[in-house]
Image (cartoon, rainbow, N blue to C red):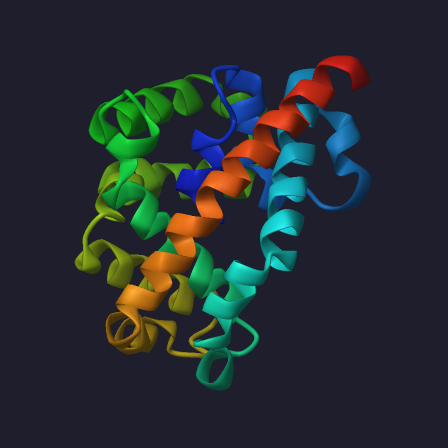
Length: 198
């Protein structure tokens, strides 16, 4: 899953949210350099990614993008799944999506000193252009895929995956709708385990 899902699945503990948000920027055992709450978030991020990568429905969705966009098929699927989460956010949260994103940006900015520099840099643009809120529309997804294409050196034109997305929309939506409740259940159990592990 991508940024919106990781943040949403973190619950109400701000340090877990921050850790989950920066998960991709923390490599190897570097997670041990952070306070316990952020450590939980980083480890939760890794477990969410592992659960997603091995889930049959996520793998089926990913197959659509493998022929043309390998090795980026997984991250493309993650972004598009965030699009479905944004579109149907009211079904999973009692908080309005726009308010949810604004609260996150304000919290993350106030704690920016705890973030790795690349995450702080990304947060600036994420908040400015409200990536998380704009995932709910095709133009927001296209913007995200174009940005990712640029950040990976334009090796693979990932924004062209919008064609496959639109052609396979019903199937991808079905995969997400069946997969995401299972991910929510998994994440809640992981968060419960953390109360005993730390």
